[in-house]
Length: 407
Ligand SMILES: *Cc1c(COP(=O)(O)O)cnc(C)c1O
Image (cartoon, rainbow, N blue to C red; front, side):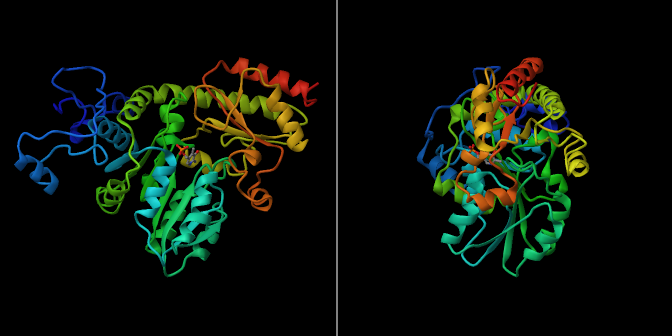
């Protein structure tokens, strides 16, 4: 492989973000292709037996088996590291594989984890159900409350886990303040940065140690395939992450890595437009009478507006929530009345998608746990896509009229 285009870290670090996303990490084969090649291979051949022995010993550069490394996946990992400003990255088959690996690789029986309670449903399951099975203690806190993080620390606390903005409540966690508490306690901070993306928020700059993504969301961004990535220091990636990934095998397919590379090429364009559209839709919904509550971080009426804008470069993101007064019945009626916006629990797609978290992404929680988070029966989560915002607004308008929330 030639390494002339985008794998020379010292050169690519001089590139601006847009250039990194189009060219970062590119390896070019002897065929001089412009688009990154898809290396659909599980294994690699060696010239001589001595080469195989040297590669297995780590004394010779090169690939050995695609559970360990693959050139297409390596291109995606390098491009993500450049985007995040991380020393290194490893891709996984899904966002949940990334979160699971980031936690399990560094925890053992007897350790303690402090986690924000407002989490994606499966992340919350990991913390509440999976970790305790292996003798890892966990404490859930209100992530917005800095004193709660400090109060939950124990002598055996090893990891803090959080999402900001959280799915679906949009709770914001003060990254710097929480990282300071974690580090004072000798713990590492793992941040799930799916909602903000590296375009709005790079948690490592605020002291986080590890960042994870579901690249299924904005990075593919076109609803095609699942993927994930774990980013951090070279030391963290080399050990403990790599031995865990290599031996447990939650590997990203080379084909999916290629789709993610293509997604990154247009990420700034898509994401900027989706955020603009989301802000317009949020303002429209907030202007309608009869709606209980619209939450969108860049609106002045968002309860953590100042912190959100400070951490997210003044942009609200692609996701908002709207809570209707008539509970589940009215929320379902509104979903069913939509003609353009799909009923779907994915986010970050170029198609606008709406879901009822209480009956889908967070149905696994008890009702009490949902209410503690503010996930009521009337709450809907809307991920705004790339359609014309006026079409989305008209679609919401006709649906609101049908359910009696607009005159
Ligand atoms: C979707 C999502 C995940 C899980 O990602 P998958 O790719 O679906 O496995 C984790 N965290 C957050 C915040 C998400 O939105």
